[in-house]
Image 1 (cartoon, rainbow, N blue to C red):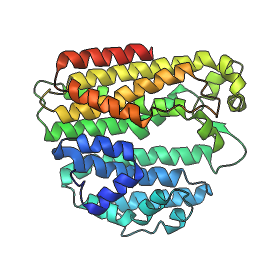
Image 2 (tube, rainbow, N blue to C red):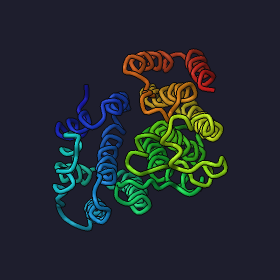
Image 3 (cartoon, rainbow, N blue to C red):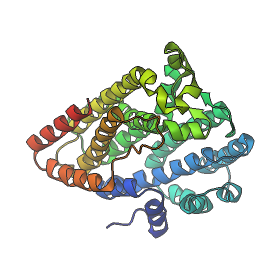
Length: 335
């Protein structure tokens, strides 16, 4: 397999996300380094924001990081945040942050500008997270309304779909495609994946005092954030939960439209897009069947299924009729 950027960056990518690394290896070589590097840069911000520590320290660390990637300061030390990580791979990433930033500095200026725009949007989303939810504690805070949820999903994921589109269209030949339409669909693609994460991770987010289900929408059901801590609340919560699952499906439909616009000659790009879409549909199917508020239930597409999906997407990238049947079948099972 090809090394992404260099051996150290490749090592960090393998350690921090095995599933993403799988998709990364499939990508066309012209955009693989940029996508892999942006993932690590964004992962640094995400790790800082998710550290259970006093919010001023997190905001200060995030600002130091923002200045470093914007070339407004020199090397930074995130050792204090690294020492608080339970996952050794995340600690290693924070301790290696200057090597990641140095690799970013070696990227061509045009690509670097596109990457930086996306990264700064993600950092702004992480900053908002810290400001809204503060330090982990016994109280649980939530987003207020759907506008806040939509803004959050754009900042941390929709912007990545935007970046993915821009970097692909600047290095690969897209004859006849409308760039604005591709960007619109790319944003919805990113939002789909983040919304699925939100709907799957409700119990774990509640554990750290965060609820991304808007309080106004819960109030409409006569519920509050604390009700989501009980698995017995699922029946009452189900109508709203289903509404959000249906929204995620609509976003995934846009992702399917996005894939259909990728020229068939770029098989690797199509595969790397089909893989998360099908995993997303299967995750939605599980979420419809199970009680997401029951902490004992695991909602996850296992590795065996992922391997099977990968084989199917490789075949689908060769035969358009099979691709259509596969995507339609997976979508129908998620409804």
